[in-house]
Length: 131
Image (cartoon, rainbow, N blue to C red):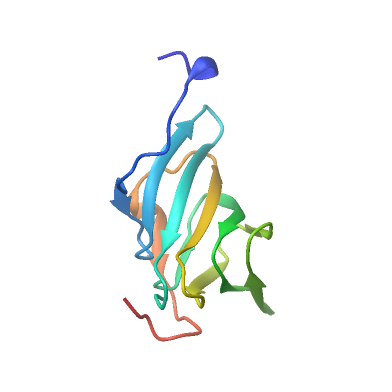
């Protein structure tokens, strides 16, 4: 399909689990980026990962949580909720957790488009993984 007229409706069920364990619903993909809807259920903590070649921009739709990022000597934990946005630079270690009573949901844009499961690799994290 011609990508400049691509259209996707949010799927009811998730398409796949991300390498970090979050639920991913595939949305639109273009030549230079891709977009997904990401869900982490209440009480869950993602697996800590880093990306080899892609950077991401996240926008929080709903829920409450925290996102940990470390790159080089810089490390930060931020509280997230509806309206919060953040970036995950290439190579940054990151992990996130849902701290509220409802799912934590993000729209995530990946640049370039997500190349596949080999893109993410495990790293030491901040919190124990909880599923």
